[in-house]
Image (cartoon, rainbow, N blue to C red):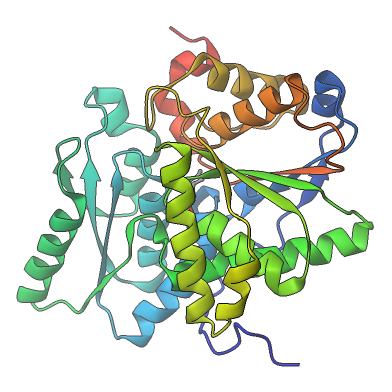
Length: 333
Ligand SMILES: Cc1ncc(COP(=O)(O)O)c(C=O)c1O
């Protein structure tokens, strides 16, 4: 039977399906009955993470448009920029990257994702913190077009309706794994930033008819703002795939309680969460996204918010390279 995504071209970049595994040690330490982790940190390509799934659709589109170059944007330690740069290398395209200087110390600018961007041959354009990223991206695209390149703009975080199809597909993959394991999840927890992961997942779950609560833990903005952003993108994705009816039944939940002082700024709870996962399950989280999302999940367990939810799945969206520019997370001075 033809599926709703069949008409969208997709490249194969990720190693799929990613594992869905139990976390028995963490479950015991949190006194939670049934706790699972979906390992999208293991999508394989360029050290993995969630953006590879989005880039499978976006880079296919870039190719269809005859692009000779892509441009994209993010923070200096953006996982999205790292994975986009790798995908550009794979396709033989130039990659321009507008990078916001969230921090300016040498470690931050030369290690972790920044080091990998360099290795992939990405061409960075640095902008100051809080400068207009969209304007800088448009200016870079214009410059390269004027120089004769066919430029494809990859949106920040890969989060337009096309990129979000990566997570519509991921929901199908997860539903298949749950069916095979006879697992009936009650709650999925994930980090929510540029919104494509949460919005795509929600649309995909609705498409396959898997009824499960999804909570997006905010990493950059307050809960109500994130909820509005995800809701708008859910609607756009549903229109894009000609299923506007689905948007009516999708419930969007975001929780802004674990952002702390702001995007990329450590919190004691994030540090504790990263250390807990490493020391109970031997799994790396990251300091910017999954560490804060897991801090939320741990707090939900401690405050009784998981009582009666049924099995819980934590969606690990990757980000591990950023650990190397946050040595304090591991207690290294
Ligand atoms: C490791 C990681 N997790 C989660 C996210 C958030 O995903 P989204 O931007 O689709 O909300 C990102 C986005 O950059 C990320 O790099």
